[in-house]
Length: 419
Image 1: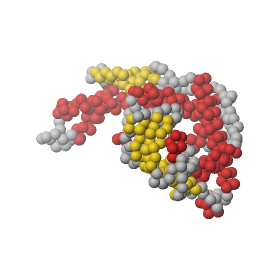
Image 2 (image 1 turned 135 degrees about the vertical axis):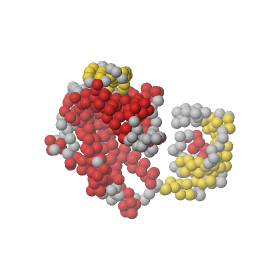
Image 3 (image 1 turned 90 degrees about the vertical axis):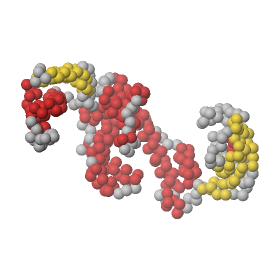
Image 4 (image 1 turned 60 degrees about the horizontal axis):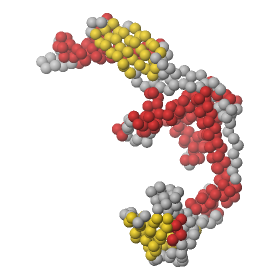
C-alpha cells in the first residue's frame, strides 16, 4: 500500500492512494466470514449458507465494504503521520477498482493553512477616550420617563404631547382610495408621528369628532411608498389621552431599583459610558483586524466558509429536519463576510497562542457575575450550571479571544490576570 501526498494549494492536499489486491485479500476474507455467520437464505440455516452462494449474491457488497474500510484505515494513518487535520469531508476525484490489480484512487482534503501574523503587537490602532455629556444622560432619562409613563383619558381638546385614539373611515392616497386594515383603530402621539401633517390635523380634536385631514407626506418619509404623496384621511375620534409621567417617590424608585433620581441618572451615565467605550473598542479592533488581514494575506478553506454560512442560516432552527443548505446565490453573497470572520478568528487565536494568553479564574468569575446580575440568578447556581454543561471551557475560550482582541489595540493584561 502507498499514499503520496501532494501540496495542491495552501488549503488543499491531494492524496494518491494505491492498494494492491494482495492487501485487500485479508480484509475481504474477514468481511466474508462475517457475512457467512450472519446470512440466512431459504433452505439454509443462519451460518450454514455455502461460501459460493454468499459470493454470488453478496460478493460485490462485501468487496465494497472491504475496500472502504481499508481505504479509510490507510488514509487515516497517512493523514495522522503527516500531521494533516482535514477541514470538512474528503473528496474523491478519481477511483479505480481492478479486482486483479487492486484499488487506486485520488482524494482531495482541505486544511487550514499555517499562518504567521506579523505586526499584531503594534498595529498603531488604539481605543480613543470617550465621554458622556449631560444632555445625553438627560435624553436617556427622558426616554425612560416616556417608557414608564401612562396615558389617561382627558375631557378636552387634544394638544401636542397627547395621544389621540380613533378609527379610519376612509383613506385616499394621491387620489386613489386605499383598502382599510382589518383593525381600523389608530393611536397617534401628537408631535411624534412620522407624518407631521396628520398630527397637525388632529390638533384640537375631541372624543366623538369626525374630521377630514388633508396633508402631504414628507419627501423623506420612512415608507418610500408614500414619500411626497398627497393624503386624505377621514377619521372619527374615540378618545383623547394625556401622558402622565411617573412620580419618582420612594415606592417607584424601589420598583426600578434605585434610591432616587440622582442615583438613576448616575447609573445611566455609567451605562452610557460603558456603551460608548465598548463601541469605540469594537471599532478599533475591527480596524486593527482589517489592517492585519491586509498585511498578512492567507487563504481560507472553502469548507470553512460553507460551514459558517450554513451555521448562520440555521442557527435558530429548532429541528434538524428544518435545516437548509445555502443556495449558490447565498454562498456568493455571504462568502466575503464569512471569510473575514474566519480570518479574524484565526488571527486572534494566533495572537492568544503566541502571547500565551489565557483567562484567569478571576476573569471567568467576573464574567459569570455579570451574567448572573443580568439574568437575576445566583452566581454559584450559574457557575455550577456552566461547569456541569461543559460551557465553562467555551467561556474561557471566548475570554481568551477577547484578550487577544484587546492586545492588538494596545490593551495588555496585567501579569496576574493570566495566572
